[in-house]
Amino acid sequence: MRQTLVAGNWKMNGSLEANHQLLKSILEGVEAGVNAKVVVCPSTVYLAQAAETLTGSDVSWGGQNLSPEKSGAFTGEVSADMLLNLKCQYVIVGHSERRALFGESDEVVAEKYAAALAAGLIPILCVGELLEEREAGETETVVARQLDAILEKSGVEALSAGVVAYEPVWAIGTGKTASPQQAQDVHAFIRQRVSEKSASVAEKLQILYGGSVKPDNAVELFAMSDIDGGLIGGASLDAAGFLAICRAG
Ligand code: 13P
Image 1 (spheres, helix red, strand yellow):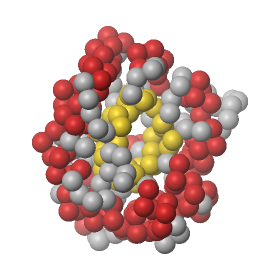
Image 2: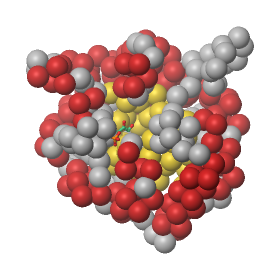
Image 3: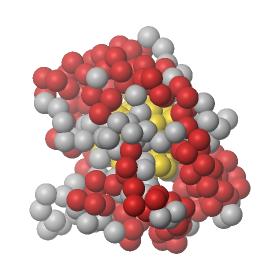
C-alpha cells in the first residue's frame, strides 16, 4: 500500500511574512490530523525559514531545483549538500518550467536526479507532455523518453528512492486539469514502464499528479488506483485549500 504524498510547489512566490503565516497554518492543519505525507517546497531563500518552523513536525520540506555539481564556480546555483544543510528531505527535479524556460534537457535532469540521490535527498522527478504533443498522440513517447533518461543513467533502483510526478504541461496553471481517467492512463503507463525493469520498484513507486489540482478535484484524482497524491502549484499557496487537498488523500 503506497502512502499518499501531497507536495506544495510554491514556485517563485512568497515573502518572510506571508510564508510565516502559511507555514504556521499548514503545520496546525497537519497536526490536527491528515493521512497524507505533506511536503512544502518554498523558494530556496526561504528554506531556512521552513526548517525553523517545521523541524520536529510531520511536515517535510524540499527545494525546487538543484545543481548537478557538488560545489565550485557555478554562480547562482544551489548544491544538494546545501539543501541537506537546510535539512531538506526532498527536491523537485526537471519541473516543466525548468525544462522549458531554463533549457534543462533530459540528460541534465538525469544528472540532477543522480546528484540528489547521491546526497540522500528524495528527488521528485517531473515528467509530462506539451499540449501539441498530446494532440499528436505522443504523450507516452514523451513521458517514456523523460523516464528512460533516469533509468539509463541511474538504473531502476534509483526510482525506489525517488518519487515521480506526472504534470501535463497543458494543465499547469491553466485551470484545465487532466480528467482522472486521463491522468490514471499515464500513471499506469509509467508504472508499467518501470515494472518492465523491476516489478517491486514499480509497485512501491509513488506517482503524483500535478496540474491545476484544487480541493474540488483532488478526491476524484487521488481515488484513481495509480495516483498516489499530488504536486500542487497555485493551490498550495492557500493554507485552507492546500490542507483540503492533503485531506483528500
Ligand atoms: P498548478 O497547480 O498551479 O497548476 O501547478 C502545478 C505545478 O506546476 C506543480 O509543480
